Image (spheres, rainbow, N blue to C red):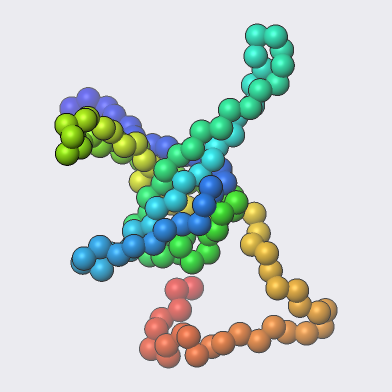
Length: 137
């Protein structure tokens, strides 16, 4: 067997809010796109900027987290694999779609937080955590 590797690592900003859907089996799938910027100098020495828009798909609990906590403009690091699939339209046109299947999505930069006055404690709603659910740490 020959060696092969399909690994993608990107850092960029969401171009729109993520779209969450569920499969008929109940598995969460979220699709979003990120803009990855690159600066370079052209032949005349002028600084140019190139933007690549990359479609991302996340599955399962990671998909739900992305849908709940990410929004347009938010910075993320995405680690995953490249997937290219080809199909034919009803008109007979051949098409292909390239996307990154996320294995890990790291939220970068802080989300805007509600301001809390010094010396006060922000109250949280503990009723959303079931008593029988195990805390993961």
